[in-house]
Image (cartoon, rainbow, N blue to C red; front, side, top):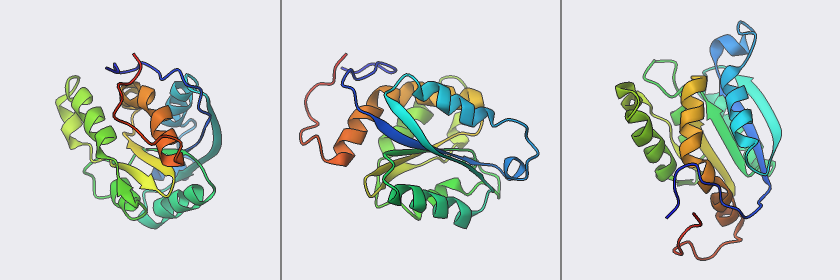
Length: 178
């Protein structure tokens, strides 16, 4: 059984992008993108190479446009941060759903379930996960702390998910390393 945070030992190079969704960040009103930095820090534990980074406003077309572009460039993984709450400006899930070919709800479900153990507000997160072509897209919350906590839960599964999307794994039923 795979425990949360246990990394698959098979070296899979993951080409990824970080998409920060923030009106104030896009306007340059935030000196640092702490949530983007948290993603970068967590993915250092994997054999991953950051190939794209952008900050976009909380606008559906801007978000979905960037997701389509990056998936079309052949990225394996795009992690978004921000725009997953209940505010009227929080449209990241809707923008993501507009580009997904297939849902992969387990990522979002397990992140919410684990986050719920730490804060009752976790149930307000509406992030989604799925595939656009061979690119896995996962919405993360906007706070750096929540980003780290969420990634800790799914980090060990990302290499296998990337292999599956690449068509390099045919059988997923065998027990995971751990």
